[in-house]
Length: 570
Image 1 (tube, helix red, strand yellow):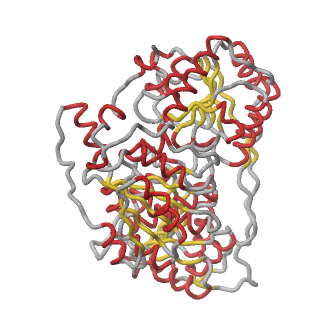
Image 2 (tube, helix red, strand yellow):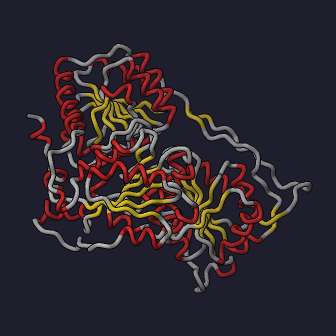
Image 3 (cartoon, helix red, strand yellow):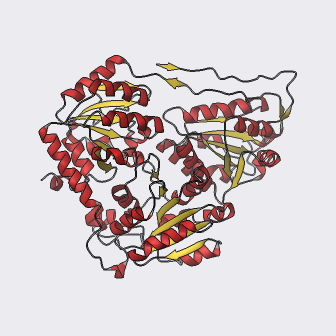
């Protein structure tokens, strides 16, 4: 059941002091617990920038691009649970947000965008930077509101926050005409408010789920993005301690199985049906999908033939398609539902056949964590060995932010992590360029722990200008570039489809010189033996550091691209 606590606020009263709507926005952000605002300034939004300057809190982070600002805000949302805020001007300032906002919405990261617009009188005129901002933003957000009067501004900001954090989480937007931001209002939203809260799934659905799991020959947990909150991870761990249930993580759920419960971990799935986790899912007769979203790994890939009985345990009802037809939908607070389910299936063990398959795939998974045989580094470092060396070089508490490209598949498969949301991927929109902005946000949200981001050479250039943002903030982060001079993730898929590549060559650039030009530290590693010391030196340096790591992707087609499930099942 859902119980919605009323939003409490003070309405306009004779005793309230009138001030600009722009000041009310800052006041509302303070009340909502916002610590940072990311953005690029402009004339149509400068009343809010002026209001922020007057009070100094939340802290204003001036970015180099609006897309970078949106990515930073999304990372804050994912890491803290409080929506990240992005503040931009009209016209291209708003349209440049589109990629960042659709990524946040697709991948469940709470973000609130506040976007300037032309004066109301110019709204329908063909004038400087006029556009249907709300129409555009409504295609990439959960909800968008364009305010027409100052009295509505605090309400619109608060409503945007509420919508952003309600499952499925995502981006919301408020469009603020310039003259509305200057108008006086006495309406405030400074009193505490409570999110809508869910109760536990019904006893009947949990009893049916428990019966299916208990009767199964080979039950498996598929953990998705919404299983990654601290309280849900704690509940999942309690379930695992009393059962033999194996767990397969999606990329977005990386890190939910702790070191203590390592025996339950059967790897990650999210690209190409060729991993130990794919074998386990293929062999399962019942799959308990916890906080799973289709966008993470389509059901048609892992549930071919619709041979598995599916239990959907989540905060929201299931999306349904031909390959995902839940026999049970247990909808409610995930942690509470898992706790109740744990009581019902305590002592559950796997049968002989299931145990044999799990043991075989656990050995295969363990073998995949072994450094490959000696590699000729003339063409660059072996990507598996480089990934494993990175994992060995950083402590468990490191927050690792991964861009999109061939390297992200290697990190997803070989970079083991033991804390939720300590290894972040963009596996919904697969947005190039997220790693560096995410790392900047992580250095703010988790200043007490190391921050490591990883990108390819192509993905890095998508957001390379944000290195200036990192330098200006003195952000403590280390960014490693898997450098091969191509869009290799595209290249190996083209080879698979057509036997040749097209449009993927990028050429080279001087990473170390680039870093130094921005006032950052730059390093180049051409031997795995040099990597640990270089990582240690980079992490100890003040401010951001780039590490250029030439990589040899010649085996990617064979290693990453094939659907090898038939071979794995021998």
